[in-house]
Length: 448
Image (cartoon, rainbow, N blue to C red; front, side, top):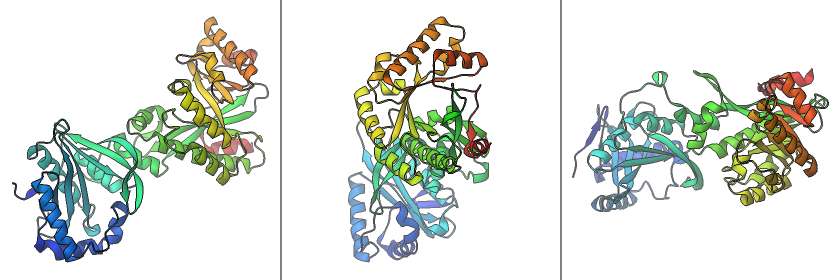
């Protein structure tokens, strides 16, 4: 049906019986290098009978047009460097397939994988007439992710327990490329790559390069800090300090919200433990971490809270979750059940951005809340807008009746601060009080 596939410095062809010894030797010497990224190897995987069975399966797959396997050879000397395949071919309305590949360690980072994947993508579009090619990799497999992105794949999602790797179900990043996208097999060097945020974000989250900065929430009665809201910041090596507004849409598109939320919670708890060890911070000082309503059911939130509190020795209520009103009302019953479990595990709960959308004061009584925070724009408008002031007064009134804390967010001027205090808010937050600072700066300020 087709000859060898050629791309830059490699050529690809289906495996043959004569390849067994070189294939088995390459796989054996790279077993430790490959096993973290592959399914468990059968005990007889590297034997000749197993290889013959493999070839028979490959032949049947190609006859059925279900999969096409290839070995990768270096063009200069014909040395085998790895393998690549396109499998799971679907026709009809889908016209799609999935790519997987492996490279020996001594051949890694030389461009062979990128050339091989490029060749198979071209084969999929030009020979198999597919419309779409997919791929997946473990979030920590930065090398594989770079290969896919430089070929032209785009990060499209995050799948929990997607594939069983080395005996354990693993989360994966999902990638796709469609006919008409630019397929790039050229030699893009690391130092010259201008990768989009989508390409860099998963590793930045996994490696802790996105970290919390903390904005103070102060008492309107005493001026002392009640807590700090953890705001995600990415100190990008080329783009500088990025705020959440810059990269959160990318997080949401890529389905990375749950893993970022867990990282932010863990880092924030660690910082709070440090502050509490100073023995000078208020006993009830809390850290508040934002979590999207769509993410609260994506992992075992109560168990995560219990583990983080135990590790950091945090009293109940000092880890606060902030969920926006718009998120909470998507499925208020489901949100209530999950948040009740979170409270039982020792978290406190705040409804954030109240007044930003389809606000209903009655919703405050339907959720297990410890605090309500008014929308930032509402606080700014209230200085001059009687209607905005009326809404804020109503929030304070119902918060008092429910016995929960009322916080005015968006307090950026002295007039706004005085107004929030006159209305009876418990706390205030905004640029007029303080901006978000790294944990070390907060520690220094608490020390005085």
